[in-house]
Image (cartoon, rainbow, N blue to C red; front, side, top):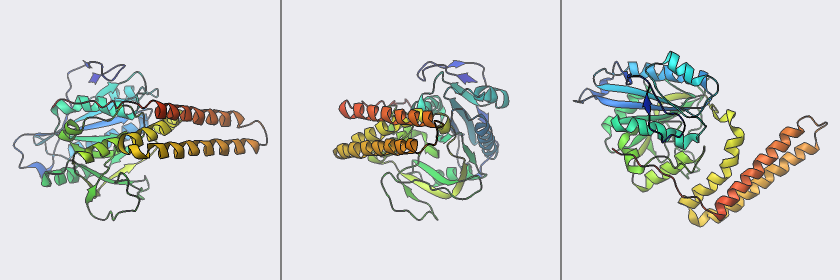
Length: 340
């Protein structure tokens, strides 16, 4: 098991010599002369129980693939969980490579750490959050599509709630109108919730911009990939369960403080002529939310709940300050490049 402590750029130190998880079978790669290496990069933060179910589903899919033709490795990236996540992985999943961070570095840096570990010996990479359960056969279907369509750089799939009702799945960067999702179609936005990519896509586009903390790093990556001509598809017959709000609920204040700044930063990077308008709209939204909380405070029958309201107001004010600073002093993109 390999571990990284502290900054995600630190040199990894091997803890033992276990190297991934050799699988047992897929009929879709029988033409391949050399084993295809499939890597799963799973990001987690205080989602121990979700991660356990997630990893069980990943390893079940690995066992369904063809030994000798497809070799799997699973990499879990932990953003400084305090709920025993790392101990659980080490005790229950010894074949999983574990990267441990000493602080919550956010999604972009977390996924980049996993990519840096996976890319040197991977052909295909699955990017996923820990609140995902892969349904049987999904990986085979995604691999088969990539095998048949050499020009496609990545595929995403349908998301379902735990009760198997469909979730709304974003597949476009800017499109508002819904698309017919009854058959495969070309998509702009594969996302980081659960998607499968050819490794060369990350070599071509680079990693996720580490200027983002939680939201928009996947949208930014998709916009850069689109400019470079990358092709992605949505596969409705490939399915996963998405529990939702896994690690997010443990870091609401930190995410909100960065949300508006990252939204403005995204517009400045990809739609610079609209950055001023985005700033005004976002600024107005913050003001509306603060005013709404203040009205809520005025209706409180007692001091119960007052402190929480005051804290929420301060969170939005801090979000506004960070966004204003971004508007006045734009951030520089922090996009890592990976060696092939």
